[in-house]
Image 1 (spheres, rainbow, N blue to C red):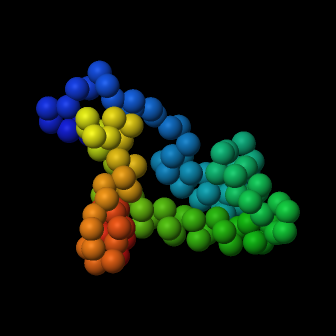
Image 2 (cartoon, rainbow, N blue to C red):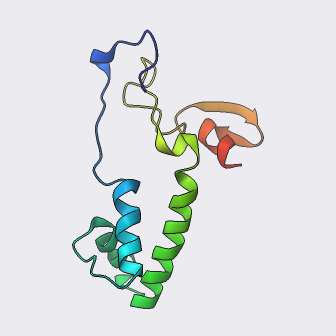
Image 3 (cartoon, rainbow, N blue to C red):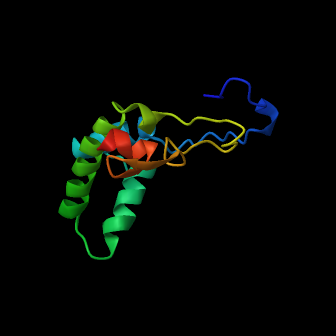
Length: 114
């Protein structure tokens, strides 16, 4: 979302193909026992658990991630980025929008999470 009155030519909007809409189906496919080895989600989780973990631990992490991601898609700031003159690269889903003493949350994103 570009803030009203902002100069869009100064915005640094980048699309990231590695996103939740790609990760959730890949993790689901893997947890169902189907081959998902060609997906970024599988490869990332495998790297995280390769050194000290096992396939069981990797699937445990995958299940926790899919639960977390399901919550993320229902929270408005997790799925958006506000672009403005103040935040030409976006506000990182509310993480760059600093607040003072609001429910012990330092930024707008954390207010929603709390």
